[in-house]
Length: 97
Image (cartoon, rainbow, N blue to C red; front, side, top):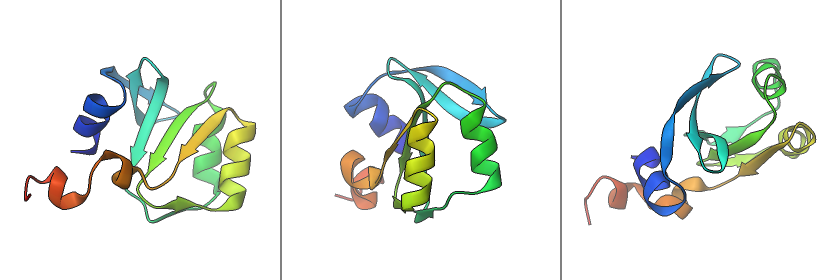
């Protein structure tokens, strides 16, 4: 549902690609990942994924640690926190209201 709302409200999805082994959306904005996480922490797996491309956007439903935001930014990634609020609440996305 988050992908559908992203395509509707932000940018059409052109396809799917693998970046460092992680599935990402290909949009007019470049590579985009939408992650349903409460807190994104800087970690070895995230480092590996982020450093294997030329950047993109990480839309997360929660927030990111200052270290994750800083390191991702240095690698050309933009972190968009609270993506659910920008794309619609769960009841809205599920069609409950």
